[in-house]
Length: 115
Image (cartoon, rainbow, N blue to C red; front, side, top):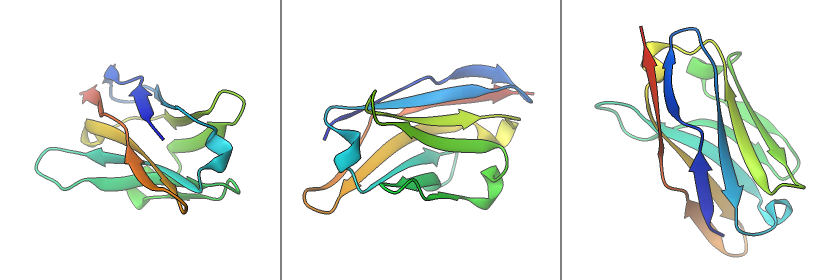
């Protein structure tokens, strides 16, 4: 499956952004989807994940501020990011894994949070 991420941009601390990840095929056939981010000087880390049963997991730094969701009709995954902090700045990547055919990564989308 091919993934197309979008929605990054520049926002002030405390603001909100919504990232989107459009898939080339049926999102309902994907077993796990996730958002990762790579911030300055750090390795890529998982931010949030969602299963085909809509079970969600969040990393501690974003818990309570970010929400991951899917729209099966639009074959799109979202990451709603609220109360953004400067330390959320980085490149965000969407990820998909299907047990039958493996993993895919989208291109990154840059999120910059200014103080």
